[in-house]
Length: 287
Image (cartoon, rainbow, N blue to C red; front, side):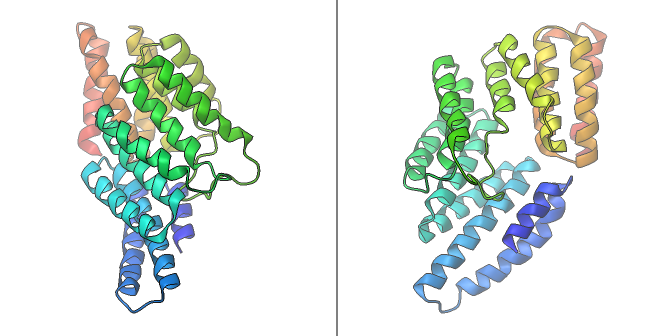
């Protein structure tokens, strides 16, 4: 059932629609944990709980409900630790760091990711866990303005391509390196390197992306247009991202567009900039 719910989450345009099913399954697992179990059965249940709380956290994160997401990730980390599931535990910590990252608390995210990296080293090295941690560390270094550390972390994450077999499970661990182009773009945009950002984001946009990921890349290309004072580019990509955000109800895309809105402030003497701000604000009210 857990694997099925992750698959439904991945395929659904509206992530929040999955939550009632997740909550029902969590209630069943909580009931089972309250019953007398063997040690092996207890560990298995903790693994299932850790898995599902990460999914619940993802749903809240997509809706920009960061406090609820962080609470779910904390419970996921605790359950995974209890189960001795190191890769799952590292992923829960990484997702928790993501909450801090999206609140621009990069200094808070950094030690959480350092802990995730240490836990991942105790996990299965045939999985991509430690490389995903590195990819998220790159975004944190970029937020702190450290280009060299960002590129080292990105180069480390690229080593995921050297893994053989299936490096992820499609659920709580989905990192296979296919997102590295968009992650590079995010990092270079944060570092004020529009030349490198555009190359990476254009590469990402040429790939087959989910609506949620495509909307995020479009929003970052819009932000890049604003950075260059190219309001025609900004308008083109903003409208495309707004359409996907409206269709999916994804707060994740909306949060990316918030970056566009804040970057537009110095350009507000141009009516096109004020119009874009109003359109993004209208999405905030609707989602």
